Length: 365
Image 1 (cartoon, rainbow, N blue to C red):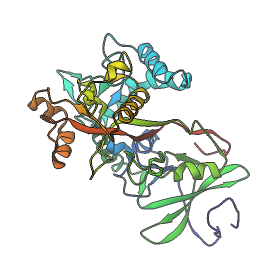
Image 2: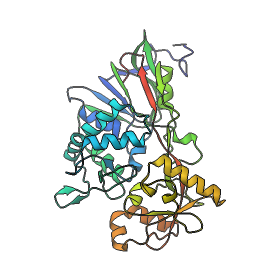
Image 3: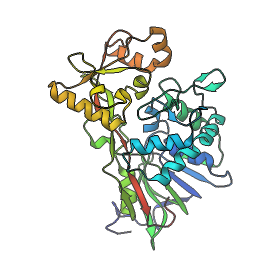
Image 4: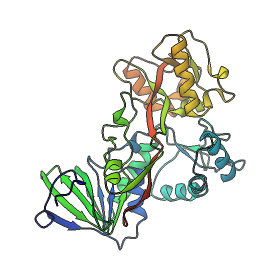
């Protein structure tokens, strides 16, 4: 095809072609979980430009919000989410989120995901903008635990093939219908066509366009771009969430210091050692992320500094070793002992809240 819409010219009659019932672009939690939920009579291909274990999902630390406590409810979760979204949330989507959360958590637990427990129940902690303890977690590597178990499960599925180091270049469309994708196979150095009646984009965000981001190198926005070229309407792209507390160290400005640390009582201090969040919001360190990020920027400006500090050192050492083992280990590698020292932090790009709106091409999900 010689179409200005496509990034490269190709001849569909000469290029190597294969067919799958469903093609999923992206191998984070969204992509892999979708593959597991598709009936096994369908042939599914997961296309990922790196190996399947590299994604933004793997880096998630804090946990997953779900209203499980007897004093909590989906209605309260909905209310908190709307407040945190400053009235800009799509309420229909929020209702789906809060009402289906429990059943989805039950499902991924059946796949072997081991969340921390308190007795026989899932342990619950709190993060910013939540009025109740509703964050379930697996230490401070929740994303990795979920990804590891879902990937292990999907590898057992005979109907799922995983295409690693295969870069999705463009969605192929004809008469406003999505027919598949054009890819580049890095291992064979060849362009190929994967045809399908259903193509699911689960490609993540574009954090790498920012100087400081928590996102891995694969988060470059190419998935959003190929959907746009195929006729997708994008929406809310300006809604970029900055995480307030990312390690600020000469050798690492991308490592996330989970919001769960503040959920367990950590305080933010400016370079004069003064706690400042009570001056900005009644929820203090657990205000919504955008408010905490702006407060930190304001303090950095006031004090002419590059960062602020997070202090959790008043907690018992054994507790911190058990609750935040990865954060403790990583900080120690940079000479910071969180059981004794404050942690230098500053905001960094974290999450793309917008993305796909309506899809004009039939067959594109």
